[in-house]
Image (cartoon, one colour):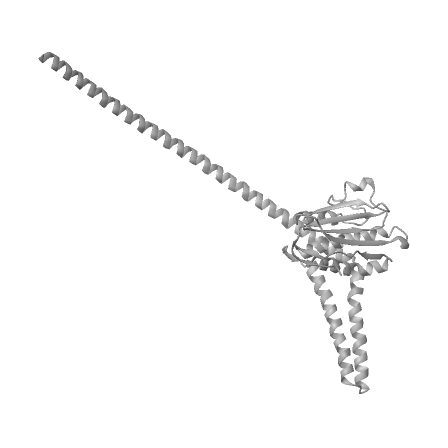
Length: 312
């Protein structure tokens, strides 16, 4: 009996020792597994950190490249505007000379009436016209200054109808010089657009001047420039400028928007390329198509915003 108890006691001791050994082994395994897991997490964290650093570096490089491209585009657009205004010098001089000539005429008339002792009220009405013409001249000069000055693009709610009218005012003398009939199609009120007004005016002015130059190749009686504006189906704005010139040759169609390609002997080849970039940068599209009766229509669309305007 004594021997049996001793045997059971020895067996219990052995089982207890085995359990303690198993417990120690289990703890060691958990400790090792935890260490391996921590090392794996640390390694993965380092990899993610390195990946994030590379991603930030790539994003920074991409942003710098995009900023460089934008600055380059802005410089090209500025050069194109300066070149455009330079080519229009005689017409712009005439545009400015008109209010100055009117001022001279009004002031001479006022001076004559003063010397004759006429009613001061009549003289005052003449002087009011002098003020109107002086403001007109100042507005023209300020408009030209804003157009050619080099500055950062600035987008704001813009009256596209007003932008069109300003562009037309800069080419009106060229239209008269070349006996071109101007037809501004009536339309419903237009949505305001979120845009840089100077850049959009540059696009419209470039298209208008291209149309004018194209129509010098046809007889005066056939020269007609049409401008149409409408609200697009997606609540945007579409502007179409059509001419009755000779149109675009098949060989030139695919190259029209290529930088430095020009159908003019002395052209820079930047106008349409810059215009397309400006329109696309505004979220729009610039397209062209031949007219059934001859000539070509250039059409661009822009996203809209808020209030409405009119060309009239």
